[in-house]
Length: 286
Length: 258
Image (cartoon, rainbow over all chains, first blue to last red; front, side, top):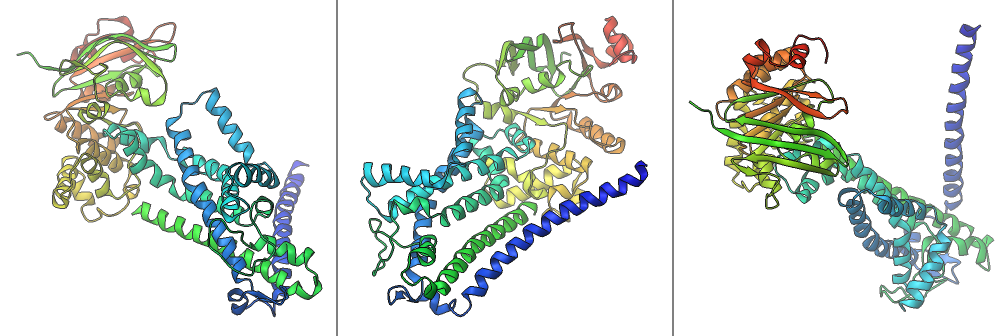
């Protein structure tokens, strides 16, 4: 009896697991397929390098890409150092007590807070209280807050995974705590930290809600790199092009191409992350 | 002729949090000799050896009573610099723990951190210490390869070389052979005999034959009924193994428990 049932269970399990994988893979392929199929004819090099023209029915998305990259950079400048340093402090220096556990739990929970809440917070703090106005600075800081918990959690995880023997060995040679961290712990944790950083940044890059109230503009005739000015961004542009435009059917191609560019930017970031990880790991081994 | 005493623990006790792990331990560590600490699992051997370079404090909150002295000075005194203490009292761990770097970089690591900048000196140091642990001939053609490419026994000898590279006076060895095969173990034991001429060694070992083979002095630890480690007997190794004074020691070395 059981000898008959065992192979059946094996097969069912395999079918369930493999089927799930197949389904997820298919979904991804369909999404990518639809996006890229519909952007054919619009997506081109000149689309990337031109300004939108004729009431955003023609032209490209150059200033919109610049806006997204700019706001993402600002968010990274704020979130990467604070996030990584916080993780190092929490994992290496802070003592493990009820207080720090509460802080850790809060950080974990922050990662699950809906992004629109960050948007409202950014509006209240950066736009109003700190008087930065609706600007790329306010939006960048808001996005920075959004990626902080992801960066902190991933960096802490990476630091925790460094084998204790690397620390012990270094301490036993008479290294100070910072020397141990700098020489033996952080280099080993670096690939994990970078992964967290890139994940956090790419999450911020694709968000719409946090920038909606804090700085993104429907359309700007001039591109400005001033921190006080508003900006255009890919996710919001995509939203306008697919729901708010006066000629939605006419700009379908632009909407899909915008989506394709956003996907490729994310993919690009992830490829960069993998490359950095790969070189780091290779450097470690030699 | 009296043998100078390099380190000494005087009525030393150590607790993790509120729980005492070892209590009232007094014994001398003789210069340029090997002192073995033996005893059953959980008797505080590792805790005790880690008290000599204050590694216990890295893991948890500890408190202590009594003293451990190095050259007459209490290493638990308030003005002790932990960094310089750990430079003087090096350590080799149970599991070989080379750093994820090349063989050469593992040796250069300590001297570099402590200020050695000259490339040629560092290169010389690599050869010097690898020769000292009898590893040079085996690895001289692959110094730039990862330390993980070595076998377990080679890794442990590399770790000993790394510990020696900062010129400690004392080398603590916490069951250095427990993860190694018998041949690698013998190599480490030969090495210890060789090193003893220049350095003072304290070794924790599970292996009584090992203690009998290599050590000059042996301390036997056991736990009392409340699971606190204490020193039962200390003396010249030959006497401990041939003529133990305590019944517990006799029972342990004859294999009746542990």
